[in-house]
Length: 479
Image (cartoon, rainbow, N blue to C red; front, side, top):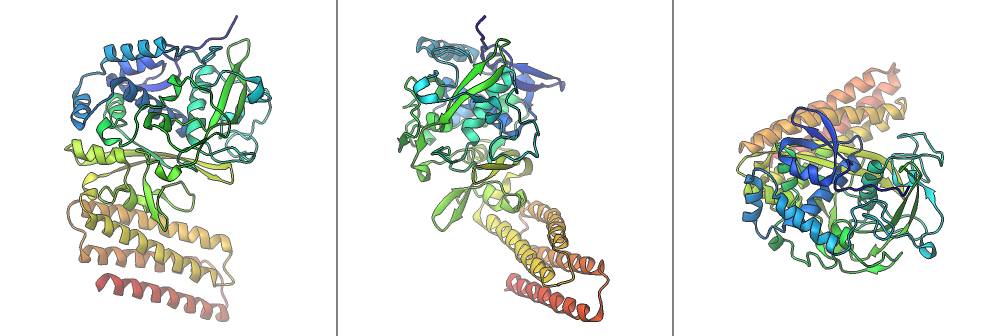
């Protein structure tokens, strides 16, 4: 019997109810019950974010809020307008859209198989960056066999993650619209409905074609490998097909193989501004904030909250515009990549006062705090590295310990800044504390060694170098 999987009504979206119970729902039930559900929750941060983005796009295309007032009305509504959503589903079907994952003509979120283009079948684990495959590291999952089979609900979630977190690879595999995958942020509400509303933008704020070409599942034309695309719509860019994918089910309805090859190549990446993404400023202008194991997320806070400077996610700026409450909970999802390899997967939840973004002065104060901590970290690292008797591993662990101490003090400063106290006195106190942290870590690190007199002289020289950096910082904050 032919395999089928209807994403509208069969369970593939993992949710948590108000009572803490885990359920697997289709699109219809998820949206109908969103007001009584807590959240989407999966073990994979990439799949979890993919579902938030997908449902947000589904709602944007179905409801099409024109203005901030429309977004406010959605925030205040008891539930989503299921009549409007059913009308949208009917519209999709009238256009030939199939919501069946294994439809022969228009498989949902995929391409119809074309032997002239798709090439040989590949094991389905190529869709899952947490499994060992090709360049991927094996520290997530050590299963490497070609006989891995996954259920259709997992396959559907992996489709979304593949489109959103793909990166450039050999043989002309293009990256997505954001180039290397950035951090994506989702603002958490009191329930799933509120969270999904926080993923929506008013059409009047988009500033580009909204739906021409249409969203991926309504698209009619083929996905041509390596075709260069210089202009896209908002809906199409939000789920851009940088891969051409076709799932292959087995007799039991599970997926064990896949056709996957190069998708379209968006060549105008500087023109794309993703509403979920924080941007940093470099010599060539704005670029997306990307995960890095060498940079803890708190060291990016001055960018994440910089609404006045246009660096904060667009959705965070909208949230501040329409909500009176000061506290915000932002979950960041990302994957660290290097030369087409997937290194680490991240999910961070940050709770902070939104008043930190009220003016550029506060943002500048936070930027100074982060820069000061990094300056002393570099000096601490240099001082420890210049002590020959100190193993290199101790240097990195000591700097990490210093940064952990700084993080707690940084959040304390954020609380002061949110209350309006981030002047010279507070900055001086902050710098005094992190200076003590740096000296304390230096002392405890070298104190763990059994050093001879000659080595002790070298230690004192490096301690003095660290003190000079501290004095320079103190002079800067007092001037």
